Image (tube, rainbow, N blue to C red; front, side, top):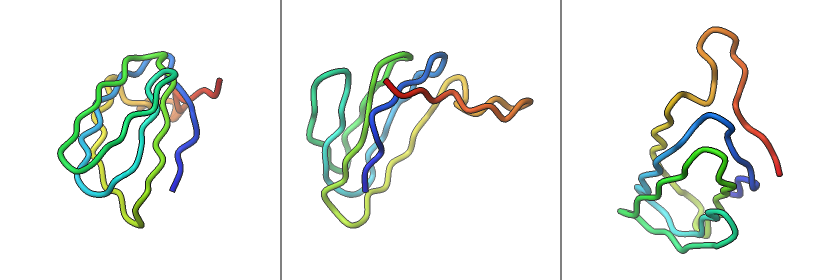
Length: 79
């Protein structure tokens, strides 16, 4: 599974990696991840996730939410 490089104009995120292994792009650098790892992604920071296992599970805490509650517009941009 691959989540392509993207960023959020207004949203910052914290990813809690629960299951799986792979790599996460933060800015211009790739980092290996596994269960128990935590990553902070500030707004406007390009990021992506590439899973090396069949099942990757993570919890993403996003502030403010990437989907606007009233308009439904998603704060996702591609570099």
